[in-house]
Amino acid sequence: MSILSAEHLDLGYRRGLLVVRDLALDVAGGEIVTLVGPNGSGKSTILRALGRLLRPQGGAVYLNGEAIHRLSTRHVARQLAILPQNPTAPEDLTVRDLVVRGRYVRQAWWRASSAHDRGVIDWALASTGLHDLSDRRLNALSGGERQRAWIALALAQEPRILLLDEPTTFLDISHQLDVMALLQRLNAENGLSIVMVLHDLNQAARFSHRLIALHHGAVYASGTPGEVLTEEMMREVFQVEGVVGRDSHTGTPTFTPIQSVRPSP
Amino acid sequence: MGAELSARSSRQLTTGQARWRLASRLLVLGLSLVLLAGALIYALAEGSQDIPIDQVVQALRDRASVTRATQVIIHEIRLPRALVGALVGMNLALSGTLLQGVLRSPLGDPYILGISAGGGLAAATTTLLITDFPPTAVPLAAFVGSLIGAVIVYAVAWDGSGVTTTRLALAGVAVTAMFTAFTTTVVVLAVEGGGQIVFQWLVGGLYTAGWDSFEMIAPYSLIGFVLALLLAGRANVLALGDDVAQGLGLRVEQTRLLMSMVAAVLAGSSVAVAGLVAFVGLLVPYVARRFIGSDFRFLIPASALLGAALLVAADTAARASFPTLLGQAGIEFPVGILTALIGGPLFLWLVRVRRAQW
Image (tube, rainbow over all chains, first blue to last red; front, side, top):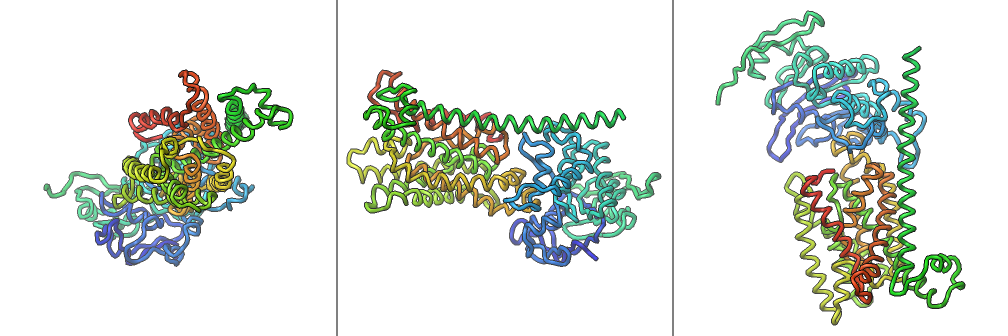
């Protein structure tokens, strides 16, 4: 059964100017779904709408079958966590200061933090490998450690769904792999459903159960990485000529680009 | 075994760091309290007639043990003025702290954002033009005026999708100029030869502060302080940015509105008793943040104490120490001149060097 879905979704930032038109998608519980598409295809816009940060101009997003914009901010935050692309925090914040704020929605303002709160915070720190760095300032961490701290913040919410917008974009390759392996582990061990936007197609194919390729604000293809990552899709959606192969290590499809076939202006 | 040992010692190290940070924050709060106490004693001792500190302490302990003249100077003149100054300073500093949280920028200050000027016009009008307006309701009128000022500035700065602090500051300058022109008109119409009173409203001063002013501001200071503390947790979440905050379950717009309203109550009530004292809301939170960090649960009490200490000390310097230094012992400078002298350069520096970032 789908945990998060969208029907007839129209999205845009100004009235009458739609970025996404009549979109439908759904995410099953325990799935890792990755949105791929060229710049301007509406990936981040869709992710924001799925996370209730953007109100649709038409259609609706459903969280466990209920229209998400009818639900309260607090209700949604207990089910779903979202990490935008480039989050910023006050410069003196430590990792623990940040992660503690993930408990905001679980705590009443008149009550001090409970043993359960502290347990969840310790778990979030431990499962992101940050326990020994918890009193470090965020700005003293490497890019990969900082990204893991933001993921720990989201985990402290105890969500069932995690939405991430390009979680690896500014990281070097080893930190990218760390973050992806962490997400894969959280999915496998805790049944966390993950919807994310990724630029690296080979990474998307390797770490996702399902890919959704977006083209001009509409779903071009949706399915397993093998079904979606095809030479034809790459040519039509990304306007790149190339060869689809198979990763000898993981068996997932890979794409090797040869040249852009974008018509010159 | 070795790894286990090193893991344990590193954990001890980290909890040690957290404990050290808490201790240093409490130390900053303690020192701020000492500064405030020092400022209050300075305010009670200094003046056209200097009173030795031991006499001040004695008078506070037991009114009857000092001469009648000392009693009057301390209990009827200097004490109410010092306490009003403390509350004005606290309110302005808290107002700035909240507004900086709302805007996520160090330029959040009721004076810069036209909030003080709106409150000033409302307070001047109700005090001077409406003859039987109850004095205790003047801060409420000032609160409404502050809100109107804030709404106008925000509407002018709004460009269809959001506001930038630069646009807010520009709009604030224009709105402040307009409101202070109206305020001057009101004062000139209502008071014959009211030069000193114009000063009071436009530059900000405690020239007329007595026990009646204290009764006027105290309830709003108390309410404002308690509400600010209750909003600290939400302000901490808001500090992570709108999208993250909303994702964490914070009602972002409602929180902004609440914080702005409390900031307007605080600024309005201080304008109602002391006029437009400049830049306290800019200066104090900026300094407090340097010492105690960005956590609003600590920043709010630290700003309150330091704001109170700053205004009491600055007012005493402006009314007693500076005139004596300049050989003009008979005259009195309004405190707003001093806060503008210190806060103005900081404002310019923040805009120029820090580009309005923290």
